[in-house]
Image (tube, rainbow, N blue to C red; front, side, top):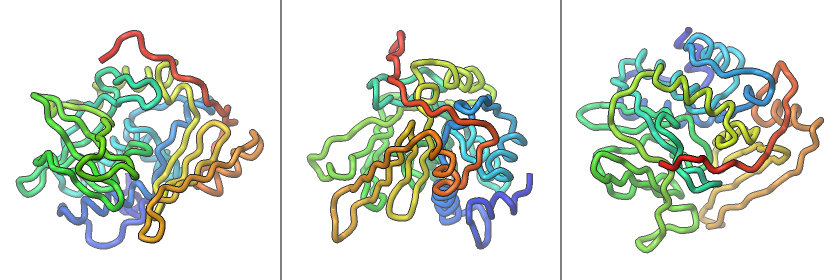
Length: 281
């Protein structure tokens, strides 16, 4: 596992030292370079969480992964650079079913730096934040055109956001995921990693997807669609989405051209309805 090669993979240049500026830059560089994707599940493979395998997949083969993969490897990077990192367990509120996932549904990171605590997450999709969020305040935290907050209720913390066109004092807050500050280990997530590859209640089993942050927007593949999202600007204060329908034979070329991903096996495109879980959390 070559630290320099990893930094080059995410386009990071400059001194790599444990500072807030470096952490913020690494976080954004990762999101701009490493897709959030589940294509292994839909091309005959199985996701495994051994760090050397994740490094080979993401760095050497320029792939992406879902939270267990991207955040596991990002934790290794931060630790190697001297950051103090703790693994946390989150539960995502599914935007299709409205239900929270089970414990260990989401793998996230707590970084303690210069007496402050930060939430890092480079393994999330469309609602994800581009730079770490402060865990030391419940106040709104603006990131470009978006606003987030971390609301606390006893031991539970809720990451919430105001969608792009719903900002302001009277804007609605939508829950993204919830978590506690209890320290976890990578091995704690093994069972849920398999669940997400086999359960009809998981978005990763039901939908082949790949999404990556871009300067000024986001690019998303799901099923047979390519969605190009342009974020609000000074001139245009609305989110603009362009949807392109794809044929099966067009998908490999789109993945290669738009995301830099070349699969070794045939992808079975999938976009099925998610089954609400029998147990709610």
